[in-house]
Image (cartoon, rainbow, N blue to C red; front, side):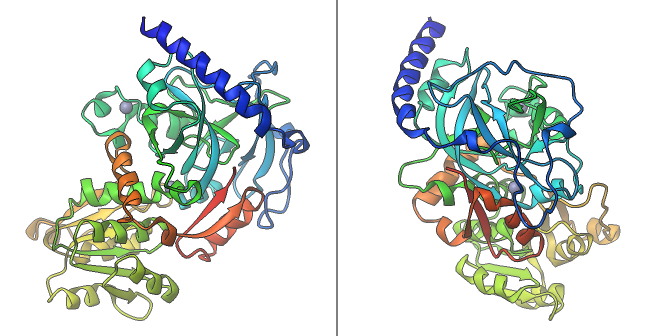
Length: 442
Ligand SMILES: [Zn+2]
Ligand SMILES: [Zn+2]
């Protein structure tokens, strides 16, 4: 019964979509043949022929509701080599997965870590894990509730941690520890059946997915990683809800459990760090101390709620934090940079019994040092936090943004055309993006 109902809904949805697609998908995807350089940062250009894999998919047309049978995506081939644009077969969602027409994708440091070879990841792959988009289609055998909830044509935002919804951790509500997400997506670049949804158009060779592989015109997202984006929120700015804001929220709500009146220090005021400031303000923190080495970022930190700003190049950040808090240290310190030195600063900045929360990813295998006796005697809590919990947190973040409690417009400092994505990552690497850049894919 349920299956019959979902098929009917799907058929209706597809026929509605067909009408819309026939008018809106006339732009020339076909012109983006093979590859073109994505940015000045990377000089040479990759191509399909680099691939030595043997797996192929039938190139025969899978069309999206009468629309195109292929799409364009930005491919990362290997460390320090240029991203290139490639044509892909149209990705096919499977059960309880949603095909999204990608509207926007944030430019995040985690992608950069992959592109610089600092975080090992399967390649070639499509990075980009902070997306908004429009629902185009559901996988076969998707349950009817999911199809109703994410009706074709609805606006959605996707979290970078896409929970399976049924593993040991997901069943406890700890979506941020989802076993298949780490075992398949982060370890193998696939979704949870062990397969990617991305195949090059001509050769049919597989391309792996960092989260949903957001730097492409379409992406497949497990439905548990999505929430509806109200029409009142813009596609571009809202993309950051899926990683920068999501990561900040996870750190503040679940790891730090920030309470009204807490003193909070945030070390590293990039996209995630500045979101931490806004979430700390939303949670009622009384002192919000921003620490960075760029005055421009510290200036902007005040817009996001910082009550104090410390330039760690000019001042001893730990001493200054203690001075601001009457010698005691902060209730919560957050490290959003991913460096051993700031890891130590974070631990040293908290009061006795305080929480030092680590959210900055770093070089694979990097270690941080802790004074064990201080940790034991002063009951310091050192807590790692990777992200938020998609099913419970993402809808809340949307509400915070809708009410203006979280200011998305101020957080997004640059909008980038899809063709300029290579340059955007170069600028991020050079520290030239204050806040967050978002790629408009449309
Ligand atoms: Zn990210
Ligand atoms: Zn799970």
